[in-house]
Length: 439
Image (cartoon, rainbow, N blue to C red):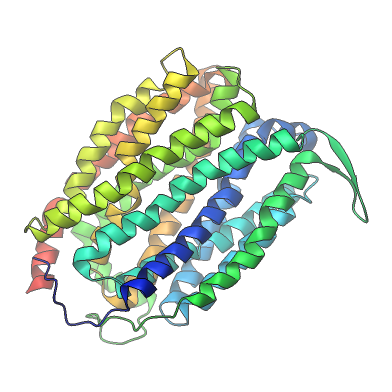
């Protein structure tokens, strides 16, 4: 199925893995800037005078809508211009947006700052999905993508752990007098401190040389979104199932990121400093251990002749994760709950890399950035944007903020079963596309 000897000349392993390391680091920074808000919800609600649903809007729609909208031009740019330059622009933009969150004194300025964060962070995924297939052979792409995908969980865990540390050092509700600025609350200072390092780290992407783009099957080297639309329609049985299937799961993951801290605060009585380290460890440890395993096993299975290995493995891992995602909100001990969340992310973390690898195996080179942009747009608006709001709305429907655990449990069951079921429809057309690609 996948031959070690391939026509394309790839960059050296040192250059390829160096690029993975830099993209990994930038992705961690993006997760810190994205998730820090979830630890500071009580103080922000009190200072800005906003409701539970408005807080969900800041965590969801304000970020995700512009993440989705930013993905389209950035994905187009990835297929046409220097990928390191486009990524640098995105990192710089989202870092400035994080700093701007620290200066927000009402809902709408905060909304605008979160929109800037989302727009900039839309550069990382299209950039990575465009670069890595030009740096690694097909039979090694699953492992490389899995290693990069660890960054989102390391970043999610680190954002909670670092956020918890910052809340211990800088009391979020306290007032501080700042030269030239005036009085600022502790949570505002935390955002500023979190945003500044990204402005410097953005420059590290220029250590990555933009590799020669692999040859594809489209008619021209600078394909348009119309070309992508024609490709999608010609392969609609696979593409529609693939693109739609991931959305419920993305909504669940963003709902978890947004509301798990509130669950442990409200239901188990933990403060941000206590829960930050434990929840960060639970979110990050499982994927860090599991993602290399997911990548190695599926690459080996793919080489053995199972063309749909990545997607088939993904379906199984999601079903295995289901009882732990539900059980975490039933057990009485918060520490047992942390363990179950960790096991859930261990099993389900395959979603971070395997759908992408599957798609890259069948996409022409000049449609990769655009495809990533379209997937991000769909997941951003419907998944990431809707996830935190759905959890908040369901909590209120069930009886109020203290019902957030029940809301998360219901969302977990529905999302995991829906995603696994929808991916089943993609298996047969995927095998057909890969057979045609090999021929």
